Image (cartoon, rainbow, N blue to C red; front, side, top):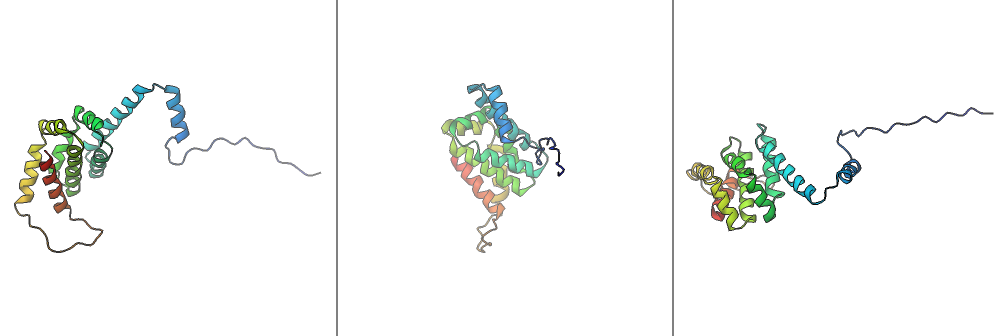
Length: 174
């Protein structure tokens, strides 16, 4: 008769990305299962991650942190939590960063925070010293700013002009 091969026990293959799978994350969450407190800790973890990104020396991390701040924290409750953790004190000086990309992202993030919040949020923004770097940015850009007549290509954005517009809107909201 013929020969038969013995079945080998196959070990589970490792995830090539090195990140845990969704199934593993859900299993860990169900084992921990705190319910209401778990939501607050996730929110605080997100705020801490944004703070770490904003304090990074890497320009890309700063931009990612500012974009996260602009998009994730758009509900009034989450904006209040951001204000309690004083994220604005870290983000506001980025209005005067040497990179124009970071300046633009900072102006956009702070503008979104001021637009999402209430009158109290705008007061907290002023209390956390947004006006000093904002005034310095406006003073630098307003000195020689003229509206440009030439049109850019559709996929390109004039970052200096966009930053100036975002800063003016932020001032208007405050």
